Length: 71
Image (cartoon, rainbow, N blue to C red; front, side):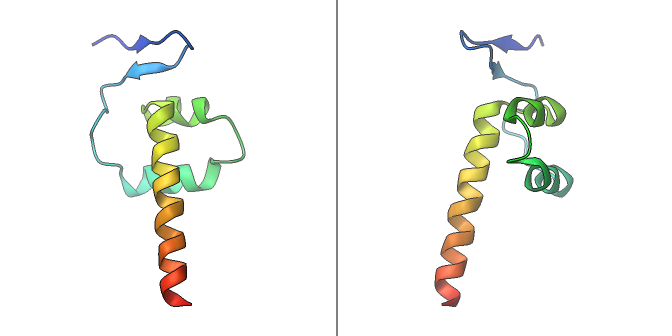
């Protein structure tokens, strides 16, 4: 299947779409998010930029919730 791009140059769909993230992928995102471009992370993992951003936002909310429960 050919990768399609939207008007902004972002991938619309990727073959890894809806596949669960591996532990290795999650570690990669945690290590490099904030130090480079999301596009580079998305290309390295075969995911869309929007899904990388969505995952990071979900993880941030989860960590905040855990932190609030501890305090």
